[in-house]
Length: 187
View 1 (cartoon, rainbow, N blue to C red):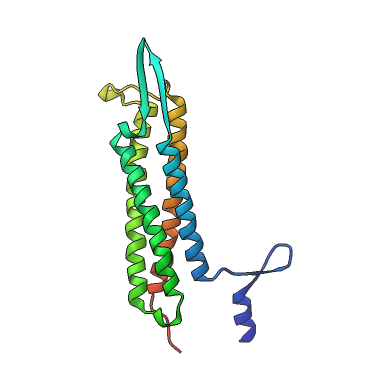
View 2: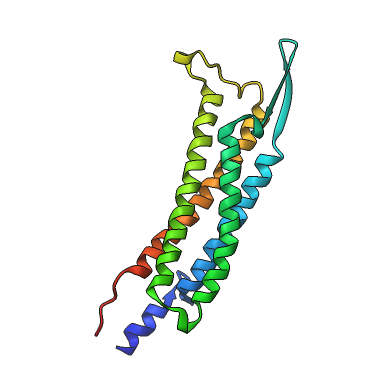
């Protein structure tokens, strides 16, 4: 029985050396820091993104603030980043032995679910507008604009990738929080 317990704490790498498994608390902190970094990168890329071109003698500017979907993505990233920092503080309180109440994990689950949903809604809105910008909408006679402002579209795509990565981090956090809420067998 002791060998079973030690095998769950250690894993063997392909090189044969022992590798310690990450504790749930360490994974929580790492994923929250990852989400903070991804959202900060997405915010910086989006806010600093802009391009001006002259098309048929008219000056054409592209900036994130001209699209409600892109503004919503920035807002979602700001909210998720801010609440990720606050949730780091909350998770640090969960690390204390006296605070292992199921209610605390439930609030963490609600927080992570709300942040995940907010993140995917911002990503979905920006992806839809990005698709129309790249390919147009022939039935509505909307022409693609990324052919004119290619640099702007490429930077928005980079921002969207980082936003989707932040969503993925929160998806994993939500699954971890849900796992913590599962009843444990008592022996």
